[in-house]
Amino acid sequence: MTPLRIGNASGFYGDRFDAVREMLTGGPLDVLTGDYLSELTMLILGRDRLKDPSLGYARTFLRQMEECLGLARERGVRIVANAGGLDPAGLAAALRGLAARLGLTGLRVAHVEGDRLPLPPGALAAHAYLGGAGIAACLDAGADVVVTGRVTDAALVSGPAAAHFGWRPEDLDPLAGAVVAGHVLECGAQATGGNHPDFRRFDLRRPGFPLAEVHADGSCVITKHPGTGGAVTTSTVTAQLLYETAGARYAGPDVTARLDTVRLTREGPDRVRISGVRGEPPPPLLKAGVNRLGGWRNEAVFVLTGLDVEAKAALVREQMADALAPVADVRWELARTDRPDAGTEETASALLRLVVRDPDADTVGRAVTGAAVELALASYPGFHVTAPPGRPAPYGVFEARYVPRDSVTHTAVLPDGRRLTLPHPARTAQPAHVPEPPLPPPPPPGPTRRAPLGRVAGARSGDKGGDANVGVWAETDAAWRWLAHTLTADRFRELLPETRPLPVARHVLPNLRALNFTVTGLLGEGAAARARFDPQAKALGEWLRARHLDIPEVLL
Image (cartoon, rainbow, N blue to C red; front, side, top):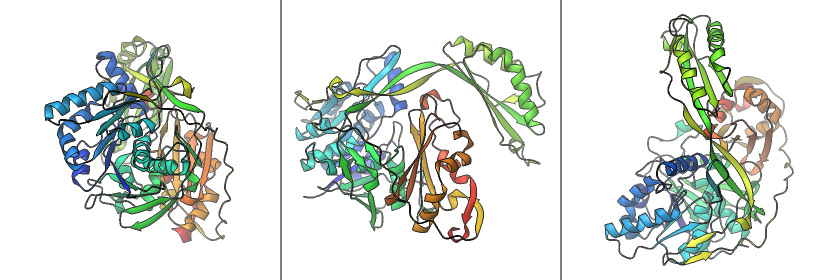
């Protein structure tokens, strides 16, 4: 059976608008997917619905379809996207209206629903993560376009693959392979060199978007259209495989994929084969997410220039103390961006950041900003702020939960309007702990040199709710032998002092020459709460790579 060519044209709500057209015109495809949802996006869509109940889906997708729906039909490419957000039925209706205006008679639009859960008190959105069965049912019924609410990102690939190859729920290995392919594609250009630590190797002025040639056994080849920027290498694919995952088991609603069985092979320029993926029954509970408004936040950034930076910072804190006493959460952070004997005023300056959060808007409003402004002529020499303090803004909180499968009715609404309820998997299993695999032999002793970790290892980091994930990998067997024995969880904490009081778990993935670290609680209540300088931990891996330790000279 011929492979199924599945492309991606969006990794987030706000990704490159022209990517849909680029993917449709750049080469042959069978299915084009788009991932528009994240924990943060669901909160944004929930706030949109507060202003206008007719909103709740990714409006950018509708504009992209206005330009490209006819092109997709002309080329025989089916569209599958989770752009439905909180209102997949509303988006499907809008697409039918668009098709009528464009004269696309007979275009078949379907959608998947059933992910929405009853709203807990104070919540803006509550949803379960569905799998790919509803997407497969819509495609089996002849849909040209399928839009969904909250499905797993990987379901955008596993659903079309299951429909094309006729996989059943018990075909766990092929499903797991498609889930891994979906995870590689879901973040768009991150699989083709975007955000890669060795970015200078690639032409990233305009990287192409990835596609997967999925085979009947669930194996695939990750590639991109000819002539597009970026690159597909075992390193770019490894980086994305480690992104926002944890241990050996990658659990989803349809299957638990064993990441420790993944094998990557370079097949040629911009072609990497993924094979060997094993699947296990999915867990008995479904992951769910609840988004709510957590309260109000405000901030001010004081510029401290020249000498006595620490003393200037201490004075500001003392002067603001009375105004901040009623605030529920006060965070100060001094970023020493200053340099001695600097050649410019900016490089002679440090930044003192104040972030305040409270359930009451007034508590972090004028009472705080007024106190900051009043210091203008009565504080440290050179007093100024990066911008005038503003009004308080609401912040969001994400909470991960797990719900019984029978609390969710996974429904495919077919192109003819029929509603098909999808059964839950007959077999489930709670993922058990995977013992740490044997480590490779340690490297022989020899001379070392103090150098950044990034000289011998790549890293990519991200967020999962309030936790941060950092994947670290080696490009060679020699570097892997050193990395596996050197970068323990304790050494990780030493290198990143911010993580020292937090639980840090290390997972070993020898096939990828990789370690994956999970830092529990680093991001507080999630990215939308913006409790941290880097609220999604996007640069945590780069901080780790910049830290120095003793590295064997033979590796440098």
